Image (cartoon, rainbow, N blue to C red):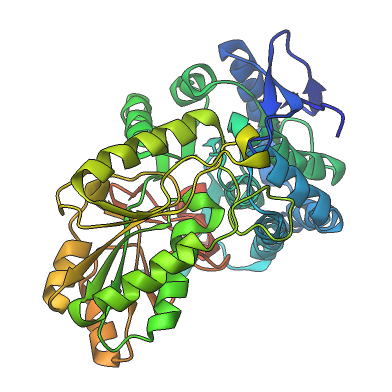
Length: 481
């Protein structure tokens, strides 16, 4: 890679900006490219292009829109290894994980291409014999999409694909820390022949580009994935113009390990949920409540698992956990862990790694805490890194009460062989996604994804649920003349 420039894409053209910033590899500090800096003027141009393109795109046959998605999926699959390596270099994710995410993005495009031939409305029996009564789904209009850096291929895709197949046009803001990866998706759509103005990308800081999108009168809806604090600010600002809003926000995901659990499987799942992607995902495992009679064995095995993980550069095939995305992120996580260490016991990890080649990147050891107060900051607020805390509990009631004890209700898991206990957990846990005998992270493309309370707002994403946000219902009474 020879320092490519992440440019804006507006009205079918790739556009340079006068100002750019460096895009660096968090694994070694190397500059791998430059990213455009934009503001309200570029947002206005992108929204204007999207508005002009809206009618023609909406009136196009759904099968024609599907063709664009399928051809883009073909292109992305053909270059999945290169796309994955770019993702690793840009945000640190180990290549094996990045390769899976690249394939998932193509699968998302194919799933939503299939939506072109699924029902877009319902028919009802009218009280009037001569009346034909039915509903139709119509596009919302111009959608503003704001995506994070932690899943830079999958998240832009699972927002763009339903927006496009249901006939909307889009203005997209990609996060700086993985913008080149996100732009590969736009290049694939462009090569597949998407008409000018249907998809537009504006690069720049959230304080300028994101704010301008949320406040723009010609954007009809905002879909955002990111922190709870930012999401709530978007909701407040968007409400002033009555925009439709969809928010996927933070998580503080619990796991319950009962006495009858398969211990080694539970340990492996918690380690994977807590430390994959360096813990930088909203569905990562943060809290584990273990039956007291298993607590010592579970904790010992989890600490051994974390201590033995190979931390290193993402393109090294032996690496199990890569760097954090940047220095600011690493510093914030280490600061939070330093505070937690004063309140509980740090069993392993939690410190910056500087030996050898690790010294030039944003590396830390995966951290396991015990003996933390249940009301400590670490136990209640999301720390977006490779860290997890473990507590003993005396029974299921205590475990579920503790698991439900934060404002975040995204994902939760239980490990048990008892079907009745699993059923009770599913019914009582506060979470949008529930796992039995599997890790808290992970989502299949054809089912709804989303949280409750402080973790989500508005209709869920992915699968058939996406139609709720990206379309609006029109009820039609048709009588003969």
